[in-house]
Length: 335
Image 1 (cartoon, rainbow, N blue to C red):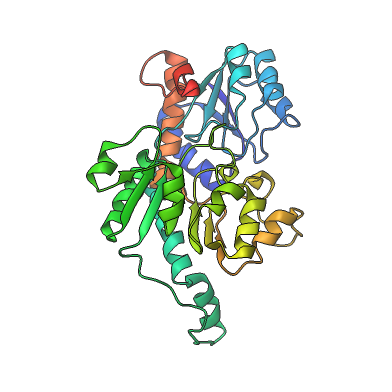
Image 2 (image 1 turned 135 degrees about the vertical axis):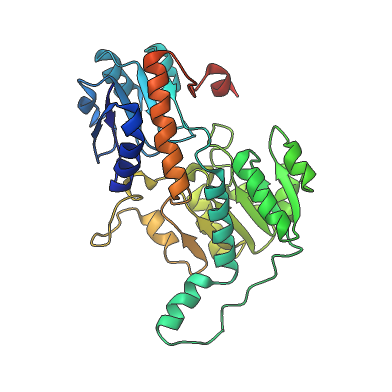
């Protein structure tokens, strides 16, 4: 099949080309994001392949349908960036990568928590300036602390296992309690209790209408003073303005973010010679107790290899009607 691959970096091409040696598709790479302004680029292709910050709205899907395209391949597990109703209306099949490397995101979540607690990012800069003072670098023992984990799917389960190894009390919230997490000692509770008791809160849930701005002013008000909040799932789960207010008041003691609700025009790009126009994001960067990474939680060799291989396997299965296809079904959408 002739595939238009959007939002591609050099590393994407390396892994996709390697996986395509066996698949044998015709891949055409576009660095630009797929949006309603760039959707004319899909003309002449058999399928479209996108990443997390592409915006596949009704206009884009209409352009695909007008060109006779019937397949949208996501290089991600989440599908919140796709107008699912429009895809259904235009009879476009959506396939995804359900589990590229849950270990990668879980381990990055832990890395953010450890770095924030022991102020590794600040200590690194100090030492490079030959400042070896320990003032302002005081942390706490993670052992024995209460960790609240919102979302206990594959990633949440692995993160639960990691925190269990630290000897933490584990609280979970998920509409579907996970027996593996319970076997590790997790106690499932309501959100209010999780907010009130947790020293560290990790967001590992998908973005849905129910989880949009789950962390808002009301939620923050119920949390322990000085709580550590880590978001490695989707940016819009956190109301950033409310988070800033919580940081200013001291309610949020430290924050680790690998995602941001308006990240599409910022993350994955080199803006080192430019002025960031997003005033809310710029304000986040001013806090010494905020550690931000640019959506790199997934970024391991194993994950990129799995993403490339599964994406091309999905495309081949759709083309041939043989093999396993990871389709976004109506049951998943309703859930």
